[in-house]
Length: 272
Image 1 (cartoon, rainbow, N blue to C red):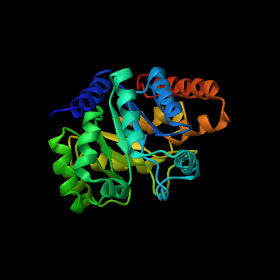
Image 2 (cartoon, rainbow, N blue to C red):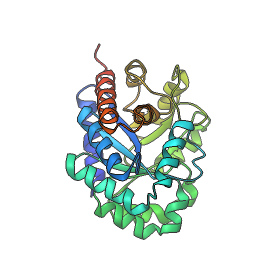
Image 3 (cartoon, rainbow, N blue to C red):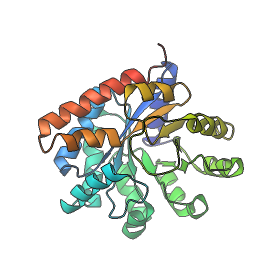
Image 4 (tube, rainbow, N blue to C red):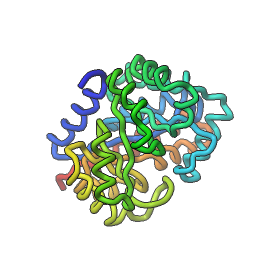
């Protein structure tokens, strides 16, 4: 492995060696501003996150719930561009030395140009990309360019995915597998449920890639529940909500996401 995909793999392996799940946080670029978003990512890392996913705001985020939709809308109204996403990745990685991925729908990459996007992401120090709506069977061009630049290609699997389909997806992916804990859009939930544990078990039967669970985790108790069976715990809406709840007070927002990261980092430690 080359590029920052190795850093991502090493980070996940280190968490496993410490008998815990990795904490993976999600925050959109440009939210609440480009500079504010970079500061928020640094705060989340400072609180204890191992990896951060930088969201590329989209006008029609069909897989995202109302909290992330609101953040994306704020970022887009602020004029966020792909260049700002790359800057966010670059500054967050440079300041922390930790792995930073981009999570995006396929259309913006397709319009921007696959070769251009992968080249710029690698140059920014990005570890890879999570592509929730790119079908594996249509991903050859992306994967060729990602491999060329040492970037991970993270695909999303869902409880509805059949075992044969899981094998196809995991064979094409790299870095880790993003396991959606339930059907539906992103957002906090009262319970993550047993579907996630079953999905992780079935996914692991097809691949040696780490399996990280997202959708619905919002507090330390849920993080601890998921950390029992997953290699990583992914949290997004809960971080975004903390910034929204700060209502424009950047200092309060940064303190809130740093505090949440610290609580979740404690939760992902499997040892009681």
